[in-house]
Length: 194
Image (cartoon, rainbow, N blue to C red; front, side):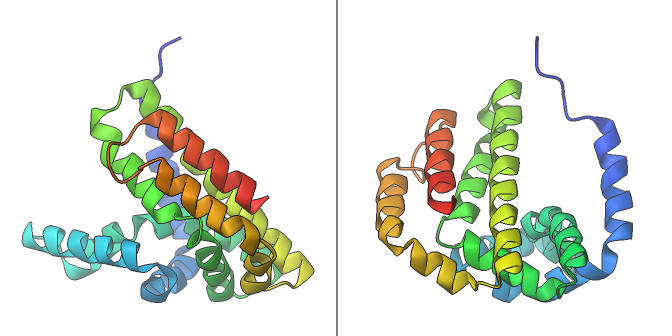
């Protein structure tokens, strides 16, 4: 069965989601600078400059540059509301968990490669990204439930951290992107987080 294109209903749902979660989304965007790692921050600033150079407003350019946070914000908002936790604290936990697994780099590499991918590979890569987001949100949920900090969680995995870094580096993700490398990287990340 051939892969179909991105469903049009998702675009409608996205605007409904933004309206529903606007205050939590604003909390995430307000704190975007401290939520992203240096790699993502530099990438976001390049995107802002490029979009402003093309005529976008500062606000629109910043929103587009923070799209990764924007797309995860509704899930974080749902989690924060369910746990009666502060949205900014939940978003910060998510960011702290994302940094050591280089999620921003993995996602950026996949997105940059989208134009060269087949339609099925794009859908498969998007599915992997969604799965990694779900895994990270699951970790945040467990941390909230147990009262652990991100630092405690990562400290428990410190022995695995160097192995994760070595495995991701050996895949050469920054060089020539491939779906197979991305899938292997995603597996290494899941093993580290679980």
